[in-house]
Length: 381
Image (cartoon, rainbow, N blue to C red; front, top):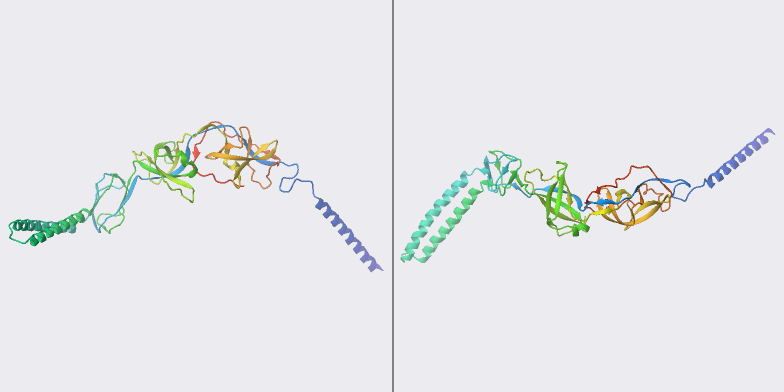
């Protein structure tokens, strides 16, 4: 009798446990009160960072970056093979146009020229005698023609020998500064071998690119200001000298070249340069929003503002881009509070309660930097 009672007790305990679990599951399924899916829990505010827009002075101009290049640059190479007999310059020094740089052993070339000149003198005399005899009808006209032809051939050979001798001396094609030589006296060099680089750095040039949508603001002769990291605080002035007529289909930008006076050779080819082009398109009451505030949905650019403690999506149109900021031409007004951080969270949407976090006050006074000449990258959506 004790075994049936024990089994009955165990069954009762199992049933009670299952009932308790079922009741707990039902309570869990009901859940706590909350907001709509994707949003913050009911009654909670989404923490964000925001700034209040105020009019700022937007300096007229475009800012971009470029690379300095020499006005003229050439690698000196011999046209003929030979042994270097003399080097006429100091590495890193300045040379004048036409100044000798290298002299190759010219003994063979000089001997060839002497031989050619001797043959030329002989054929000149023969042609002169043949001319006199022809005038006296003592030789046929054909003999005189052959003598003149031989004289012409020797003239050409002498000129060729003279040119070969001249090629044994390499001269600077323009005034400039030489770099570090790659050869020494006594070394045998071959035709086309690199010997030294010659550059002209006054004026120096800078190549840069701008997006196609600002091409209407650019022209030849436009003033440009350049700064380099090597001379902080110094500004070098120049002007645009060429605009490439072809737009790069990959970057949708055009290449430009400007010249900068560089009499003291402070600027060097290859340096990274920051440029500002004067376009005269400034504004005294521009509205600028931080770049990180921008969102994009297809072709629509927008920001989130805070209205009555809730996020409000505001489609905008943008204008000039400056370092860290973008000008808003439509969709916002002074005094609007724009969310700058937190707007990309998955739960953010129109009408979500938000709570601005304490931030440092934005710099709303003074002039904003000049416009940056680069395409506006789509913000994270």
